[in-house]
Length: 227
Image 1 (cartoon, rainbow, N blue to C red):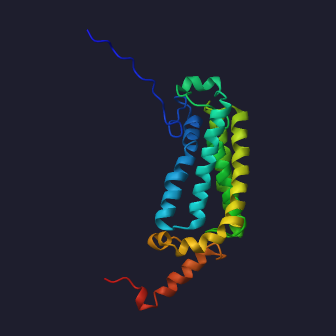
Image 2: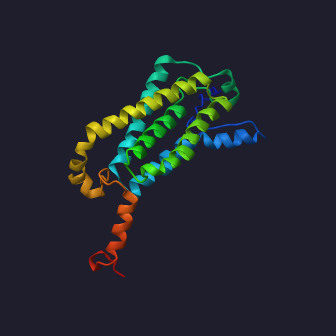
């Protein structure tokens, strides 16, 4: 008679596996808010590479990856447990300090704010209202959702937010003060030419530039699509 092997312990992908109390409408809403980092990563940066291929966007995404790597190192070093409420969610198999969601969103918010303020990218400085009404409220709601849903303590989300904001500021300075001078080299490299990678950091208003050039191209036969 053969022995029954014990079932292995299951682990959840905690970035996407979000639970809330049944019937809690606010919890349901905040559960979706908690997935904003996933939407930014999959919907935002992947579509950005497919359709725009801007070096600023690529280094922005690379900075977020570095930030999450730092988060994992700190979590494994500190090994601070999640709050007791997390036990009800049945996925407390990872450490809680600092909150990776909070760190991700505040890195994103700080970096995006600096891009807009410095007039780098698709938004001009007079469109800072987009940052204030969309980006920062999403960042704040995300850290609130992690506490409300029981995944983190207040201290854990504030630690993640502080670290993410700091890393976002530092990475922006590294990219735009140290690495930006290499952007033309990347543009002219085999990789840049193969994938049409570009840098528009020197253009004050990218949307207007692209709009004007798209209209102007209609007048030239060489730019017209063949039927």
